[in-house]
Amino acid sequence: MSQEDITAMNNPEEKKREYHTDDLIIYWYPKQCSHSGKCWGALPQVFDLDKQPWIEPANATTEEIIKAIDLCPSDALKYRVKEGARIDPVLARGPGSCDYQVTPTEMITIKMVRNGPLLVKGTAKVLDPDGKLIRESNHVVLCACGKSDNKPFCDGSHARK
Ligand code: SF4
Ligand code: FES
Image 1 (cartoon, helix red, strand yellow):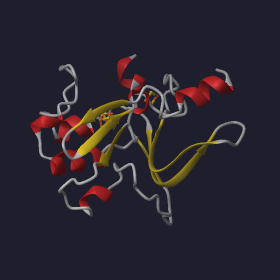
Image 2 (cartoon, helix red, strand yellow):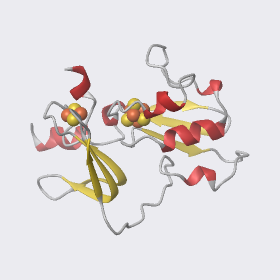
Image 3 (tube, protein in one colour):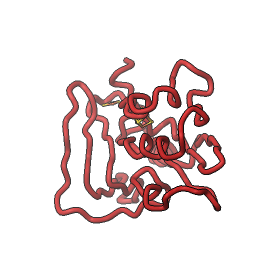
Image 4 (cartoon, helix red, strand yellow):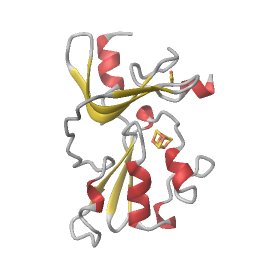
């Protein structure tokens, strides 16, 4: 895979999808999704892979959606609070927020998922082979099976192929 391919694949602005409510813009980056199921486990009435579109934000409150997106381990789901939204601003500053401030932590934890990815928790910078920063986050999901089309990130292929 060329460096251009790696850079393009890991550019979260690529193929971003948007879903709007009165209070929120929800962003979904398909290539970042590790298929952890945290979103549909928390709010199956909103996140349903069998439906089209698969995100139906009208089926939950803004607060419920924010809490579910904050669980996403891979930054595949993000939200931005719209101007004038009437929600608790503290609630909207979780890890799923586009405005989330990455804070240094003392120790990074890397958890192995059986037959799946590596869950990195703690401030991490992911660099490409030339040392260029491709992701900085408090939670990153790295491919450990070698099948991802979005290396070094898990794209859920471990569960599909
Ligand atoms: S990685 Fe995020 S978007 Fe993908 S299934 Fe898990 S919680 Fe949902
Ligand atoms: S571990 Fe998920 S695609 Fe490799």
